[in-house]
Length: 468
Image (cartoon, rainbow, N blue to C red; front, side, top):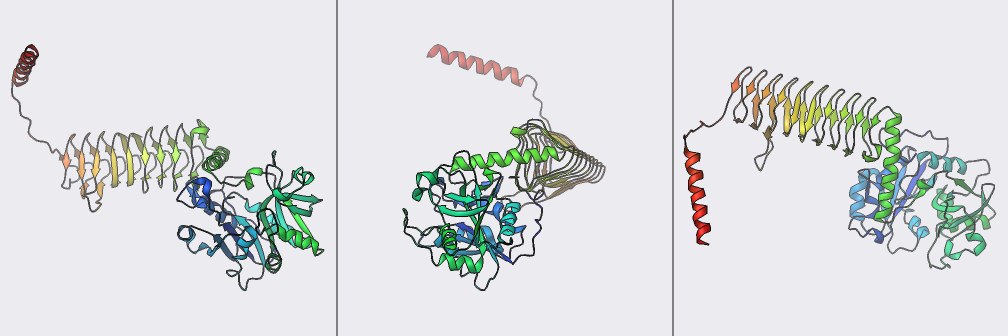
């Protein structure tokens, strides 16, 4: 499956094979993206495509991971942190030359090496494991390549094979007409033992149409030595689809979302209009959850069983407990935590705030940096004034408190349990339990003033019109 989320990814059982190193090639310039952001850091489902790939590879428990970069090293170092070693390819002389740049980072390593591509992010861990298992089959191939059979083979390199054994690898530009007629294409991914990989790479030349050192040439060299090379064929072309442009990025996003929606529904959630719901890579959705139209989840959203997400909501970094209701037109920002049976209604924004069980904020409110007790009621237009331009402050509202409409709670402030804040109040001091707080200016009444004002303005307007 293409969709890989934290909730969906499961460890893949390893064989008793040698230790594993992952080499991810990310040295391409990505000129078709036309972006200052490195190509492999463009997000899908809110997560850089490179990290999708590394997450899948991590289920194989690699001993080392190396990312080979060209430009944009600083960006990649920040993105991968201590998850991988960065190796630099400069200048860039092809994929074979790129893999050679990882040799220093793998110094002293003895085991299997799996070569992946940072812009091919959705290779399944099961497929990676199949390649490694084939590498350790009884016939001990020197190299295992991953092939695929697209409907249109385009300009992909070809894998000439018979009964799963490779007879020849050839780049499209160097292929004959007969070789181009072969539908089995080279994904670029391969597996080999470290000692074989770098020994074969040392013998690769650049006598080809591009004058580059092609990684697939190690297969032909191994074959010339009388050794075997094998091909594993994926049954899902999208698994090996490269992402090189904004259009391809959007297409990959659409495929990921379509599959993730199916997973959500298979797990017991109801999506009223599935094509309009957008998940993040780590969205967790429980059973008997209802999600209406045009809902967008950012990273870090957890929706418990039996919650309802009404139409046109945006939820990120938030937890919605069982039986709670959100929206329509609500926004939950990071740190929002809605208790069981609570309700956040239309045009309510919640940020770093907790609503207790059964608490309600039904209309047009901003609740930031707040603790709202169970069964409390927040009236329409209420806001917590949590920021003074320099620091954030917290508002605490007790259980069963009633906050009247159009109130401003000026933090730091505490509203006690069972307290009532009258509509239109600006509260800047604590309210005790059971207290009524009314903060309004005295109303001034001037009988007849409005009538005299209207008469005077109508006369002034008429005089101006007659003069003009």
